[in-house]
Length: 65
Picture 1 (spheres, rainbow, N blue to C red):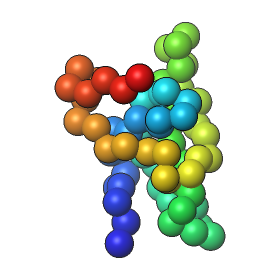
Picture 2 (cartoon, rainbow, N blue to C red; picture 1 turned 90 degrees about the vertical axis):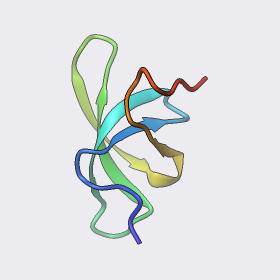
Picture 3 (tube, rainbow, N blue to C red; picture 1 turned 30 degrees about the vertical axis):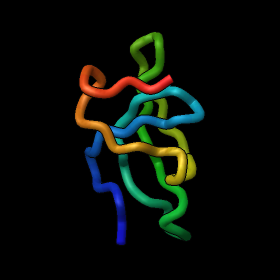
């Protein structure tokens, strides 16, 4: 069963970035695409491992170090 759905707010524990979940990779639910919010205000889509992601409600509600 899939943990994330399109539009979910996620936090990547290794990259220490917040983003928006896009979709799982076609070859496996172990990898996915996420639109990450970069420090300069730009959005960068990356292909990452799902195991590093945490579902969050908002930046204000959860902070990770």
